[in-house]
Length: 206
Image (cartoon, rainbow, N blue to C red; front, side):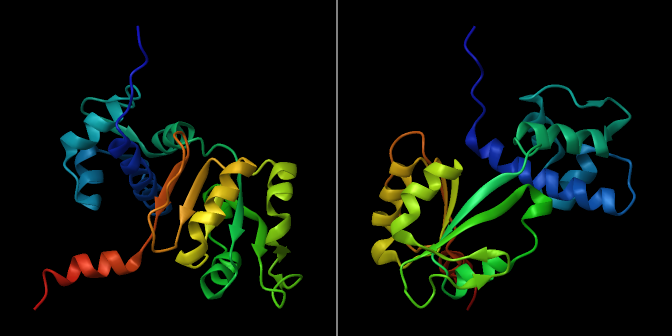
């Protein structure tokens, strides 16, 4: 029997469930329900149950879900039961802020490489990182085996840098450049563009 393919839109909701559950744990809650989880996220209880059913049975009728158990299961599904190393490409204002951000490690990620092509930035220390010359990027990524990159370079060079990253073995890119990146099949790209979100919201304002 062919393995079930879980829709990407379902995978995209799992981190939101995990985030809400981790907040519940901080609040001291030990059990929850699809209804309570849905109320926190603005998602129907039926949708949550349907999403989770792709991966098995995690709760019991009438008793709900163990918060701790469901956190553990979601972390395993999302492969967050390990620490993922990241390469940061571009250490301008945004890249520098990301390099200093302390919230990655306790969520399963750590930046271990930082690159830039500006001679004034190369060799500069940002937190625990030393900015390296982007010319060494392919070799360094291959050496370290990093699979995920965060791209904070200008749109004019983003595709060129992406091609270089893919060639070096990067399999997932979090893109902050305001441009659609073209990548081969099997390479995952998530683009974060706050301007697009702002433009979406202004439709509803007058």
